[in-house]
Image 1 (cartoon, rainbow, N blue to C red):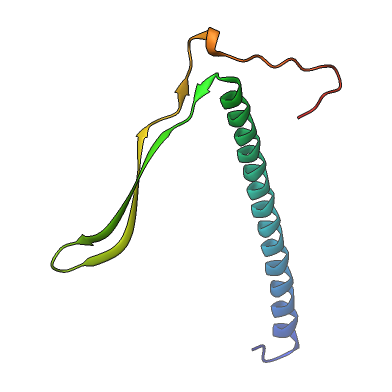
Image 2 (image 1 turned 180 degrees about the vertical axis):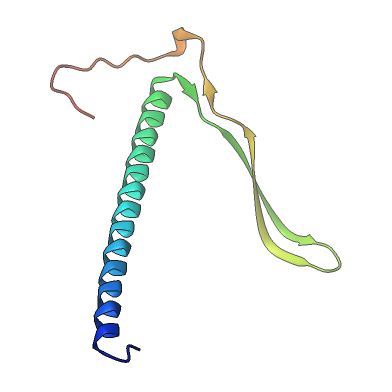
Length: 108
């Protein structure tokens, strides 16, 4: 806590500066997160379109419900295990592709 007027002025200036810097940092973080969200969403749209057109295959995920698992020191009940069996991939056979014709003015 400031002891006199000079310290109080210095303290208030430092608080203002810290607040401004914190606000700028928060704004930059928000902008970066929004840009990342936008990029990821657009990527999901592209993935969905490519999958629907047959240009790529979807990943294969196995799902296994385990009623009881564990050992002498740890016991888990109702555990669900999912494993990626096969990654998504390109379909090189163009006869399996379904082209999409877009008219001028059509938007996704």
